[in-house]
Length: 112
Length: 114
Image (cartoon, rainbow over all chains, first blue to last red):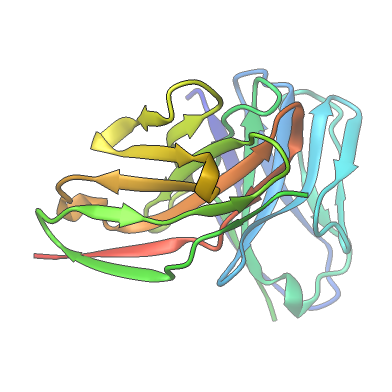
């Protein structure tokens, strides 16, 4: 199906473990984003990418790593998960700079 | 950097009543403005957007929003709320030509009473 997908949808892990959240889009959008959603904070940008092999930090990048070797994929890695990274993570993509972003269904991550 | 405030954390309205969700932004120029809706367990869906031109914009599901530069506001309205409108609503402000710098409000949760 066309669109933007995220996997897994739910993940429970332990402090100190490495976790990778996957994001895949079928539109060939140039721009992709990772947000985290926490109660009272709305969505906060973690990282974004303007094209394959071009990534940059957002508002809250500490503790996260991204890569984008292919246009359609934008994985987010928590190198050593902490409890403060318990959150809902959303991936989004956009075709045009500054325009509408299309969101995936989210990944709920719990770090014990 | 721009910022956005949604003053109301939670609003309850009766089905059939009118709705207005408030959004105030801070930005040095005319921003790009968006309203998104999030149903439980879902991602965000765009309701409407404003870039320039007519300050009253129409969106999907019968929603509209009005950009008021003098008040730095972009309030979302609907004349008659349906039970299916119960969701979380997010206002977002973007900086033109700067796609990475979109800021979201904390959201307003809408409850619809039968």
